[in-house]
Length: 370
Image (cartoon, rainbow, N blue to C red; front, side, top):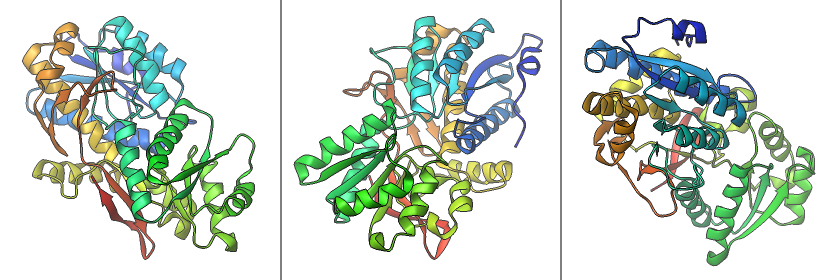
């Protein structure tokens, strides 16, 4: 994968490039592997746009900023990128970070196409400046809740750290499962060590444990503790936020990485464009691309189309969201207003519940799909 340009390198241009600011978690405590895949998709699409003449004869240029999963750092990066004259913002993986970036972009009048963050309330109030490719958390996590019920799980423990994103996930699961006979038992990880989670699962007679915690820790330690407790041999571990999607999960957990269902935003079969992009991303990453890499590619595909049609004027870009019709790697991308969602939303990409196959942990099994 190409090394992202430093600030000084990105800023040394002849003034002819159309700049897009890219917000990406590239260092801890950010989810670095997700950031690497997101950036690979963004960069690949930029290269392909420039290979066919750029935007109105001008090259497209990414100006990359590492958010490191820090909302304040992301907001400062938005200010910096706005001063540099970027035409739009792209990217971000962490929902709480994207929320801070979206608030700042909205305040500055800077178009932001969010690639991967799913928190429903990406902004406090409806905004014309922000659009999103990833499905809203409520949509994906309700599909995950359907999967839990269909698999026979009605007593579900949630190991949750303190954050707006995890609290939102817990609420979605509880609100959806309770009317359907499900019970959600919350295990606050601020007061529990990973080993103590096992006793709580036994005491509460839970049949499923949902990980709403950071990666790699404490998620990896919790999985190891549960897998080694003979009392919990039948319990299902789930991770709707997608921790098992990335190769690092399998590397850290080995055989314990398998049979942990998570959400993935891919269709059962990619389009011809998707197949071609998958091949290019695999070469760039030296591993199978995650859905996050496809989100990065699709982000630039949309922005390039808007910039070609409407120029690099920020207001005209924001006004164009409802008129977008772009063939992405995972289907036709169009934005609309969705009840309960404050930004322009692609409704919806395909949503799958998948896991790693115990017989072959590098292979994914589709367990449930929207």
